Image 1: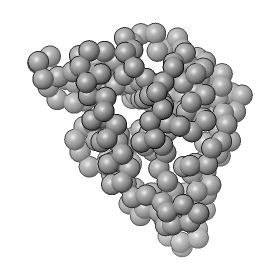
Image 2: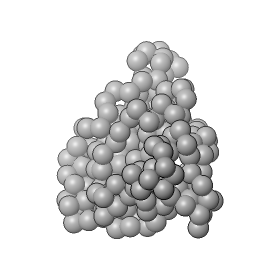
Image 3: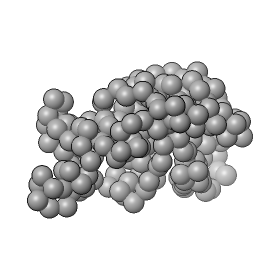
Length: 197
């Protein structure tokens, strides 16, 4: 490791299962609780996280992320930039439902969203939020590991920002409920150490 590479690893944790994550409905800003099995899976993360030298942790302000962090044994600071993608009018709808209504295949990464009760976000706006998070934790990563407890799409986009690549690459990544990814460095280059574990 060169002097330029941080010593710490970045651990991304997706919240435990909710009703909508189980059904495949896009869950952006809707503040759903964890299902009982989601709570059990979040508790199981406690043992997994003991292998890291955690200096700080951060969580999305949404209840599903905060509760996952709590059950995993963390006391995170809250960071609004870790919120899930604002899906606008597609909130609560599945990819299949959206595709049927449009009469063609739809993906959030290629087609984006349209305004609804909330304005929605572009993938670039989600990436900008991820960049702000990474800027804020850079000093913490100089010494120890940092855990971010958040959401599927935002965490995937954050990984692409870490890799210094296009945020649309996140379409090729998946992060299941109550799973984690570890980002770090190979020499001076940012890399994925493990994914969806």
